[in-house]
Image 1 (tube, one colour):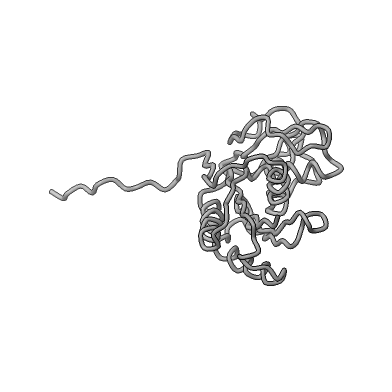
Image 2: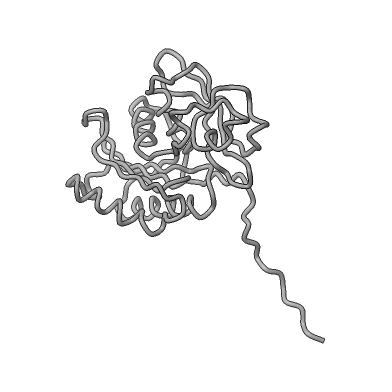
Length: 223
């Protein structure tokens, strides 16, 4: 199975993962900028596919991170994934973006039985979720995702750029203090679940806040 994974919940990233590739990874790319998703995502995917010698016909399924994340960022990734899935006639699945970092933690030397993943939600808040690990299995989402002030999170080891921003309030792991959800781990998580016969989400975005943009009301007539 060959999966194209896309995530724009924080940075823009995409990856090709396959059950037949070493370590499941065929190719990947990721930016460091959290504000240029629309400009870099489509060209990055095109270049990645060309470099791997892959076309839409070769893709078996797509998976997209559905957040939580800011409106503009999530829209860029989800719209791109939906468009490609429609054009190629391929199934599209969704996955909580924080799951990607949970798997990265699980595959690292820093893994612990229970932990938090946190990303920057701005406004002095974080998007977060609580995970557990057992017997080498995939991380299990136990609670969340939520958006909260860092001081209100459970007292557990915390991983991710959100934890790094508020290391005074959280037990932030220093090796993950700058980490963001990455499509590479999102794809690996989705591949493992699909091969095990487990279902995924649809591509509905997880917006945990109301949009800042408001539809203007009717204009008043001048007297």
